[in-house]
Image (tube, rainbow, N blue to C red):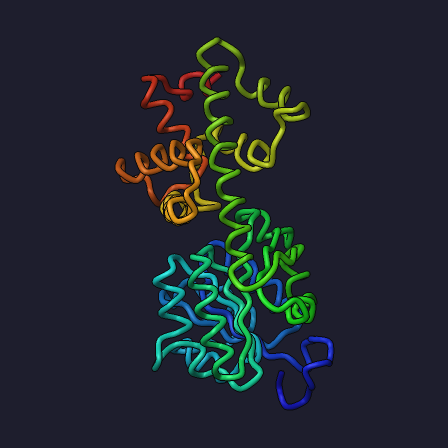
Amino acid sequence: MSSKSTSTDPINPSNTRIGWIGTGVMGRSMCGHLIKAGYSVTVFNRTVSKAQTLVDMGANLADSPNSLASQSDVVFSIVGYPSDVRRVLLDPSSGALSGLSRGGILVDMTTSEPSLAEEISKAASSVNCISVDAPVSGGDLGAKNGKLSIFAGGDETTVKRLDPLFSLMGKVNFMGASGKGQFAKLANQITIASTMLGLVEGIIYAHKSGLDVRKFLEAISTGAAGSKSIDLYGDRILKRDFDPGFYVNHFVKDLGICLNECQRMGLALPGLALAQQLYLSLKAHGEGDLGTQALILALERLNNVSLQPSLSS
């Protein structure tokens, strides 16, 4: 860590400088918890205006991932796509790794490719730094409330050392070597994909059969059909609130990575493939910037029904 600490000292605001790359829906809240806890934080975001809230809270603004890393001991990243991860971390001139001091730690929290996590880990090791892949689940509310589930891959001792930081954002689960955090997150996305499909199909069926959909959701939420998806998205769907806790575009990206991994492994997961096709249809309708709960729109179109008329009652 910084010159004031050794690698065995517990991480705290007096000995660890934080860098944060990516201040979108999730990153802004997650980074905010670190600032509130008293850490010195430097932020970078491609669209500078999206970092303004954090700057107002006391963060410093860097003009590149490289300069950010040169002022940081631990660098977090949560960006959109694997290509973005590669650019912000590994670009030889502007990337974070090229600016990080010996012993520094990269923590990529983007949902990305397991093979890229392994590549980043090797690149970090070659310059005496450490990399952890730590994608998260829990959506915008989990990020705001510090209740995310964090899937960590890499060196277990390093993951344990980072716990004072992770615990401000949620609960960390050590999944194994580099890349295993990403594999766990992809398995999480596979589980969510079919859960969301089940939820919106249940809603469409309840609506078509003349049930009060709100009462139906309240009734099933405490039974065997209850799920985090109902808790997070049931009410939003009924209110036609499709603001993104998690973007359709990013979910399509995640499910695409899952399908590629399945092909590589020789795995047939038909539920995953079906959900990916339905989410892709949202993208085709220009709805990629809506939240994943917008899946209801695909099912409404498929069946030529709309929940909207019943909402005015």
